[in-house]
Length: 203
Image (cartoon, rainbow, N blue to C red; front, side, top):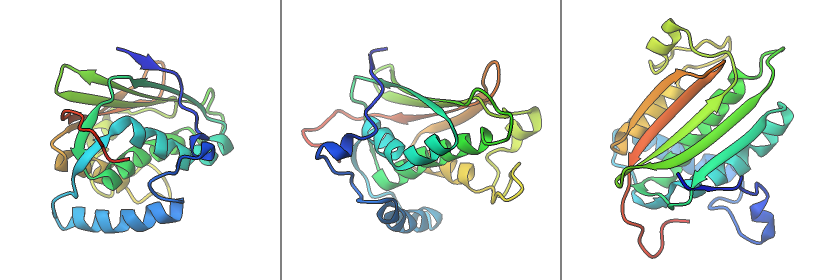
């Protein structure tokens, strides 16, 4: 697996803009896409560079990671994995997994707090994205029910984030799984079919 260094989370300050100018703009676009998902409407598909989706979402969540004392490591494939999908829904998918990891590591006494995000090509027609955390982990019951709507282990949780994430993956023809991390924490991994990179994948 070819790797690139940890991305510069301040890359937009160097003169390049995000697809949405702020988290408020992201949320506005997101609401319409999630409504469409709930109504089983087809995704608004385009060629999307999944690594750029990851970097953009990390930029939006940078402050939350810093405030919670979370160390970030990224290992992103240099093969430029391109998928055909709805970019806003894919951003929400990655955001859900990051926020889920932050919640899992926010309990007092959790140390170290480490978040790892990786992507790599699996064969020639599939890209895998993996999010690892060092939080509370998954017991047998949680692992069995974690993707059920309204199931949550958080006192103030709604139990919809991972259910929506699985629906997004399914709508893109992919697969999604969760497993324990060692020595502690959880691993969430999704796989999406790739397409040949055209001259202008969606930025």
